[in-house]
Image 1: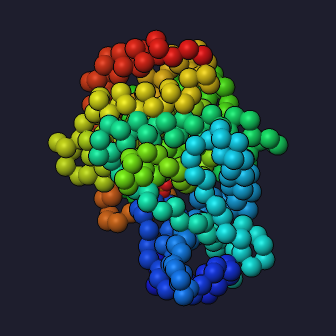
Image 2 (image 1 turned 90 degrees about the vertical axis):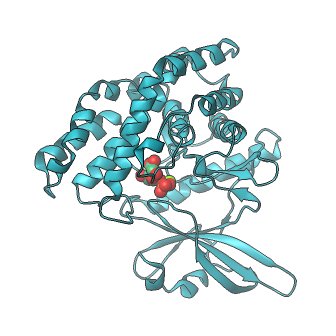
Image 3 (image 1 turned 60 degrees about the vertical axis):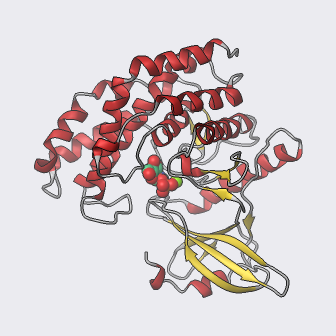
Length: 367
Ligand code: GN1
Ligand code: MG
């Protein structure tokens, strides 16, 4: 949905924010929800907030997703007060009705959070320290949610990181070819089919189920603009029961890559072992007591698995006529798929190095 089509002021007025609304602009480059920065001003100062429209076609149960959100943030806030969690926690602003979201007359779901100042959301790390800090922050996030009280969190998207299911639905789309596009991507289809074995590397049933973030792109953790420290984990919509390896792998996919997800020049794409080494260090520093033997021994495969999965998801969406991810041009999903597969190829070339980095870091880390 486009900015211009929305009656933004009316929506914002459903949240009793102090001051007068003085600015609205789009924020970030999420592929699913619509995100805006809101500025309100009174005589003395201004405040910033983040307004989001939840994509309810992709997240079919926004109410229970927001219930997850409240439970997660309350728990982390408590851990923060107890001095156990060293990061800021997203804070929701209640609607006029006192709910943690507002539903407009068109059926859209909206939420508002306080803006976290001084944070950079980076598409790739400017240095190793950023990668280390991001990994430490996502690790601490997992480690502090291990004792979340109450029933399991609601599953916001089913089978989200089930690589096998993703592969099967990809094969279904290749066969059905609803948009007659498969002939243009024969090379990518073959590339994916030759790597079917990756669909079995992290089958969720063989690992402990823990609460994980599930969308640990580097830009989902804010890095302090001056100190370079991780300050806040963002985007809690897919936080649910899952496997820790997917979080580790997805950060490696996005941070230890020489190009960002939308790069079209594949010559610029390669895996960056020194950044990866920093991710391993940061992640193990905050999760070393958490991981069991099976998780430790499979850690080195996670970047490849998740990169394969993302490549499959982009390619499937291309074959399906671009229904899922937001796209900016007709071949956007195809370009994204090509990049993921190129990155996977580079990871394969570095697979011994990746394994060595993980194994040597694990030597110094005791469960
Ligand atoms: C989507 O919208 P964003 O950027 O937070 C997607 C992730 C992908 C990512 C790829 C719910 O996340 O799984 O890794 O795009 N989120 C969902 O950029 O599918
Ligand atoms: Mg997301």
